[in-house]
Amino acid sequence: MSKAKGDAKSAVAVNRRARFDYEITDTFEAGLMLVGTEVKSLRDGKANIAESYVSPEKGEVWLINADIPPFSHGNRNNHEPRRPRKLLLHKKEMAKLAGAVQREGMTIIPLRLFFNDRGLAKLQIGLAKGKKTVDKRETKKERDWNRAKARIMKNYG
Image 1 (cartoon, rainbow, N blue to C red):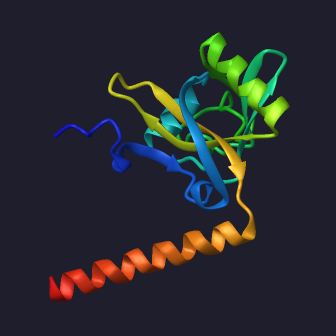
Image 2: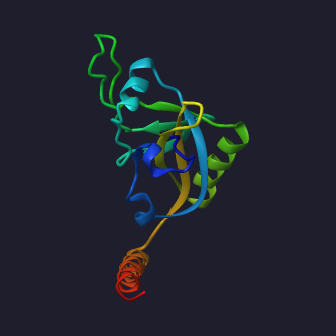
Image 3: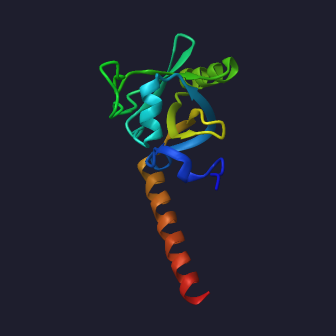
């Protein structure tokens, strides 16, 4: 049984607060430059991208503060857990991201870390604008109403 491309079960790590704290305008899929023990640790399902962010620097894009714990069966050449990791994107995508961050004051957030159909580690990143407290309250109200509506439809529908 194969996993679908956008299936949540294929994700290694998901940033659940991202869509609550930010309004995502555009998403990109980026490759990651990893070492061997990082890939093995990801295949074990161990990663945390909740506190991480993406930063364009000197024509390159970097994933900063993502936690990929050391591989349990690794040796002394194991990787550093929170090292900056280079993201692999097309030049046009990098230019678009850097321009949006500089000109429009937007933020680049990691949304989901997963393995694609070919078995390569990918990071879904989003170009986002921070939500105000009022917008967050509105999102919470809408989510609660949808939950209540689903409950009512289940009981009476």
